[in-house]
Image (cartoon, rainbow, N blue to C red; front, side):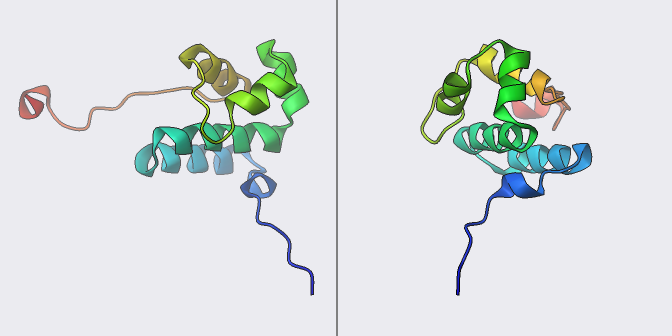
Length: 99
């Protein structure tokens, strides 16, 4: 019996699925989880395509979006734009309650 390794990238096949996955990671995950999630999304779309849209090389993308990586914010933004996403801030609590 052959067991295949689970790869979330195989299931990110629609904009809605990608958005749901990314929003879940943003809500529940760590910084490293977010970087890995963006990498999963980039792989599901195709690293060559993402490389072309960001102006980065494929090896640089793989390195920036791998476990333990600390990519620059500009890299994250380039990749987010290339995968059709962005960052939106919504208020969680009134400012006076956080001080």
